[in-house]
Image 1 (spheres, rainbow, N blue to C red):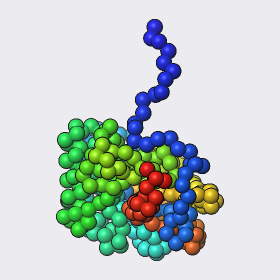
Image 2: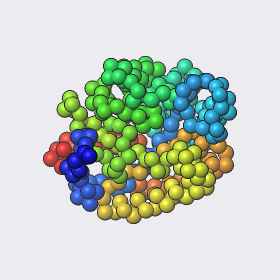
Image 3: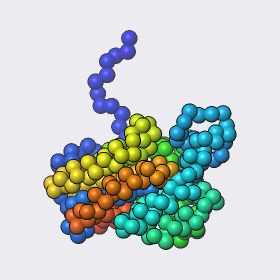
Image 4: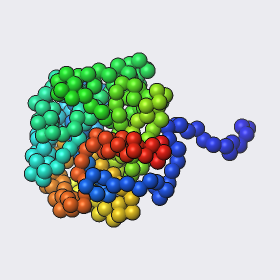
Length: 305
C-alpha cells in the first residue's frame, strides 16, 4: 500500500496565493473601480474534421448540422453583434482565429475599422494547441502574431488559446514571442502577474468561464434571457464589490450563440443596463487593462511583483 502523502501538492509556479482582500489598492482610468470588457470570439472551423461546439448530437462527418450552425456566427451573428456594440458605443476585444483571413477577411477588417482590439486566438478552433510540442507551439504563437500584423497592421499583445488549452510552457512561449498578457486563466477578478522563464513576466487578465455563453448556453443549456440576467446580476454585484477594490469583469461571447436573433434581443437588454452606469465604469479592452497594469507596476514595482 502506498504511503499517505500530506505534503504540498504540485503547483504551477506562476504566481503565489494572495487573497483578494489583501491586495494593493488602485483605480482604473477616470477614477473607475470596475473595468468591463466584451470578448467577442470570431472563430472558424474546418469542414468535416476537427473540434467544435455542437447544437445537436455529433453525426458522421461531414457533420453539416453542427458546422453550419457555427458558421452562422461569421455570416450573420457577428455582424449583428457589431451593430449592437456600435449602437451602445461599446468597445470590444475581437478574439481572432487567423483562418478567418482566408475565409472572411472582411469580418476582421470590420473589427479593425471599429477600433476593436485584436487578440490572438489560434489559427482555428478545430484544434487544441496543448497537443503541440514546444517548437510547434512556438511557431503557432509567432505565426498568428505575424499574420495579424501583416493583414491588419497590428500585432496582438494578448492571447486566448483555442479551447483554453495550454501546455506547461504556454506562458513562457507567449512572453518569448511578444505577447504581454493571457486570457487563459479564470482564477481571479484582478489582473495577476505570472512569472516566465525569460524573466519578462506575463499578465493574466481575468477571462470568464461562468459569464461565458458556451459553458452556460451549450453545456448547461441556459436560456438566452437567463444568460442576459446573469450578466446583469454579475455586473450589479461586482459594481458593489468594486467600491472596496478595483475589479475586472469580462463577458465572453460567441456570435453563433448570442448573434441568434432571440438571444441578441436579451443581450441588448443586458448591455443597456450596463451602459446606464457608464459614468461609474471603465468600458475597455483587455489590452488597455494590461497597459494600465504595466504603468502601475512601473510606478510601484514592489506592490505588483
